[in-house]
Image (cartoon, rainbow, N blue to C red; front, side, top):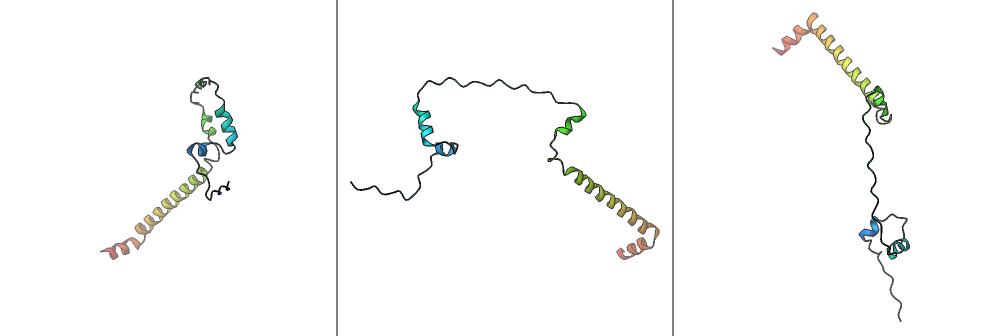
Length: 110
């Protein structure tokens, strides 16, 4: 008989094969499907008890530090921005009220 030609393309991967873990080979799948013992119904896990929320002040400390490490720097930036805006407002109020700059700017707008 003549030799069979080698396939040029890879085998198609079926849906069941793609969802299987990579370490599982065909032999393991054949061995599990070849044994035809009646299976027991799967054990139902007992529901886990739900803990009541902790009302102590230490509840915020349960948040991982990596998730909230940026908060301190953000609060500092917001404080600096707010302070600089208030200082700029006070300086402009002084300049426009007690110097001739306010009258000159009003004259330019007229």
